[in-house]
Length: 147
Image 1 (cartoon, rainbow, N blue to C red):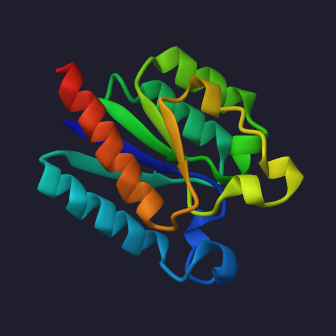
Image 2: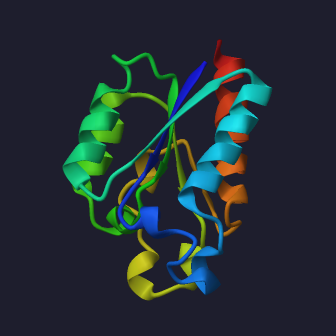
């Protein structure tokens, strides 16, 4: 099983960016923990990060051809703005879990709406780095049942 882990804009700044909201873990440390958990489960996790919306759209669009079985996506600010990401998720037809470090529903009003949630398998938010680990376990469980 092969999972694509995508992270959107500004997430390369984790560890120093608003630690009161996002915690003190770096993106590299979170990615390492997710990949380690993936190995324990018996799946490969390939991680990518971009600040560029079009790059994320391309990676999603190419994911099936690259042999991925599912996607974990922290679209960050693009969650609340990107119809292009929504369309790419819907078009590729792979299960996608939307993930956020913070509880977006408890933050600014503009963060309450997700363009991508309606085309995702599920949303996990508010558990810091554990959101990623929960997303991986949930996606792995779903994919394992479908095989």
